[in-house]
Image (cartoon, rainbow, N blue to C red; front, side, top):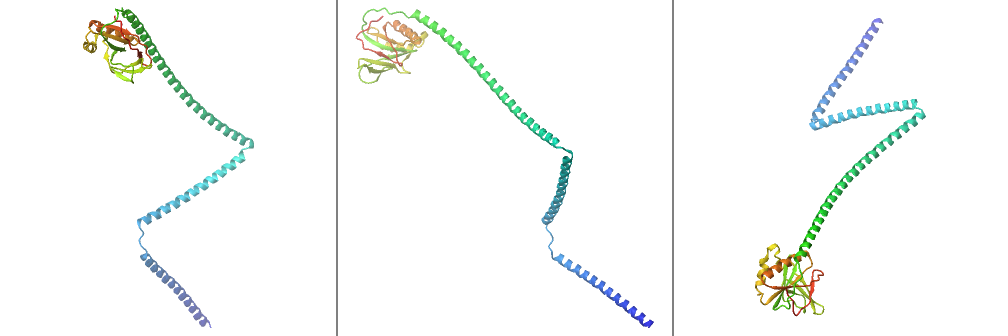
Length: 308
């Protein structure tokens, strides 16, 4: 009986050992198969491109940064919560009102500072405008002084011219009715304008160096010198040649001169110079009255003249 039990126990151990060996062998076989299958599948997969590797690396790095920022945000939230709890635990209602008042005061200080800066900028602009206005006023005063000096000089020149004219101009001495044909000249400014062939009928026409328009039912004519025409007056002895040459075409034995002189200093001075040329050339002359209106004057035909 004892021998039979011993044989049966050894057989059971052998069976258990065979079973364990078979299990390990199966596991090893399965591991070998898995390795082979894995190598086969890996051989079928294509090699990753450098761009894919870089994108995978960047994605991994971004995930790492995200987790890091999330942890930092969580830490900040926790820190803020702790500060709020500490503030509420340590601050009374009066302290909160004081804090609010302090914040309002700081805001008011900032607003006042901004207004002060604006006022300073406005003041600078005002000072700049005031300085510019003072400069313009000084310039206006300087120009006014110059104009006053110029006016004083002109008034002084006018007084000297009037005194000179009063010394040079004299009333003509009439010698009786002139003999011969009259030659008419209009003296305006520094020029003499010939008046030839004037008519008191018809329409406006040119007569020598003047424009003539009949008026008063063909009883008179309005005369106006044409700008740019005529002869320069021989003032101070110059420019006498043109006027003298015009006179030489008409002998003094059967011609005399009639001057119509505008009422201004320049015209009086020109008349004096023209009269001297005429007298030196032995021409008799007379002066006709002139009443100027709108740059023109009216003449009335006369049958004879009295010359000087």
